[in-house]
Amino acid sequence: MVERYSREAMAKKWDIQAKYDAWLKVELAAVKAWNKLGLINDEDCEKILKNAKFDIARINEIEKTTKHDVIAFLTNISENLGDESRFVHYAMTSSDCIDTAVALQIKESLELILQDLDELLKVIKTRAYEHKNTLMVGRSHGIHGEPITFGLVMAIWYDSLIHAKDLIIHAKEVISHGKISGAMGNFAHAPLEFEEEVCKNLGLKPALVSNQIIQRDRYAQVISALAILASSCEQIAVAIRHFQRTEVYEAEEYFSSGQKGSSAMPHKRNPVLSENITGLCRIIRSYVTPALENVALWHERDISHSSVERFILPDAFVTTDFMLSRLCGVIEKLLVYPENMMKNLNLTGGLVFSQRVLLELPLKGISREDAYKIVQKNAMKVWQDLQNGKSALNEKGESLFLIALLNDEDLKKSLNEADIRECFNYDYYTKNVDKIFNRTFQ
Image (tube, rainbow, N blue to C red; front, top):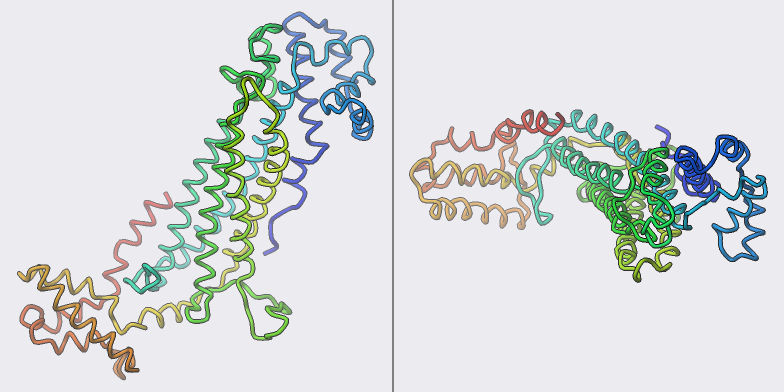
């Protein structure tokens, strides 16, 4: 599979051309609104809609004098119009244009992120079903616990990303608001109907109340949603890095022909893509703090948020877009080794079945405390045998723990040999996998 990421799609949402395109959309929507409200006649409205355009080089030239990008933009627009230019930006302030335009950019960017997420979810679902019954050991604290399946691991990844998707969808709703309420948000120079019509033309909702800006808690929600998404993606990347450790080696990133892992050690096959994803997720999360700090501005506004947003918004979206595409490729081509998973599952000589034995004893009338002592006594003996170099399985394929239990006279007073052997049945641990999948992938 060729990595899906296009360096142009998301980046184009945030380049200088896109910024001024969004500004122009807002200004033209305002012209249409004033026309509908009767301020601008049809002829002047048509002239503006037809002839309003900008030239980036010219804007840059004007801005050298004005030191104000919106004024430079509007001056350039007016150079392409006649007397009708007096109605462009009428009764508006800079943030009316900028904040409403940025809402459009964020909304469109979140739509791309949602497309990326859907592709990633599709790939994870496919691989999860592929390995629905692929046995492996579950770990807590990095220590072997009980048998699970690799499909269940991937189901967790899927569910976590579904939660993140819900947050992204909510963030898209939160950010899809514009404001055309004037310099202090008091609608002194234009009616509320003007704002409502502009936002309707742009596919946005009007903020119920605003001052000179859209309140930055909306932006903070967007960045926080991206950060939570990144954390879920990093969880996957870290898991893959663990699976690829030489001592584990249950799965690994695809290693292409001619690829090199180390300049010094020719044998190396490193999880470089997952490590890259981990680093990118750290960057995405780092933008949460400045986004939150942008919420508290002076009075009706200051401009301390502006420099932050010019940096974190493009970078957060471009980085998230790239990261999701890279992760999608990693999972789709992930090499999985069921034989090694089973080898590791047997590594502790059957200790992964200890809880099953523990739960059988109370059913035979043994107290939980006594049952725990019996099972733990045998488990600790197995640990000691493993430390002394004993093989986890004998020549018959029987585990050390099974042998220890079969030789425990106290245990045999409650469980016969058939009962004990039944406790080592893997099917017991996978009997509800189908139900879990039906609930997860509905």
